[in-house]
Length: 175
Length: 186
Image (cartoon, rainbow over all chains, first blue to last red; front, top):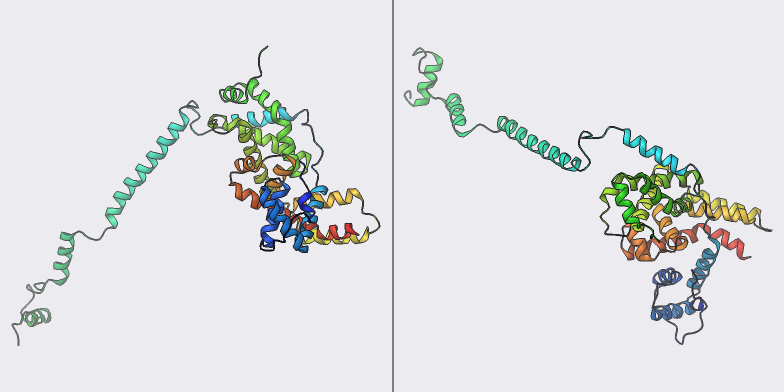
């Protein structure tokens, strides 16, 4: 991959474009290295580089880096490459799989059906258990109220018992 | 003359359990996948393991290949993901600070002439110190000759994300190798 270097050696354009900020210029240098800049953008970059020593330095550094970093030499697969791969595949095939009784085409459908069943079961479980934890229904609440707040609870008590006197007091019979 | 069977046809046959078709597919692409893994891991043994894992995934997911992308893009995607996951598993990323220190000391002690081999090693280590995704983007763009669009497709990101990854990779690399560059300038 060769890159036209003319824009890396500033001095071709007329004006100095310092409007382009250094961060943008450096991003554009990276793009220029991969030939991703348009002619107009290249010209702007060139303008910026002529007036910015810091970006010129950055540019030189990037060119140096590109020249230094080379891919490692190509290697060839070892003679046992495919054999080892085959072993892996055989090992994986031997491992028992979910729904191994089903054919491959039915497996996804069965998996989906199982998931739906789990969802239905969870919903039913929630429905039945939820009923037990609910607040008492209206009629149950009324009964509880009657039981706890029953003003006739002392009716069967002896007339002079404390409970009966208290009851009469509550009823307004005693002044 | 019978034309060569397409990758897609071979994959369809492999998905149906045809081992010969799968073997042919592996033979056809093993070198490229292996060298991508080698460029990433810089270790022959790791590279073989990674390439085998990538092909294992091809075998396992052959049925799910819908053909929306080219087979080579799909294969690259599997290989790239395998490399990135492997890297995370191994967690062998060297400490960038140590690396900078190494470069400084090496550059100082070998001021009269830095051995080419040493320089190469330091460059390798600087590459290894890059975040895996940045490194992979750099390998795909610089060594594999992939376009930004191809890299985006393989790495499942947008083109601007590729631009950004490459810029950050180059910036990080420059920062790691600055001491070496200064010594080299003299």
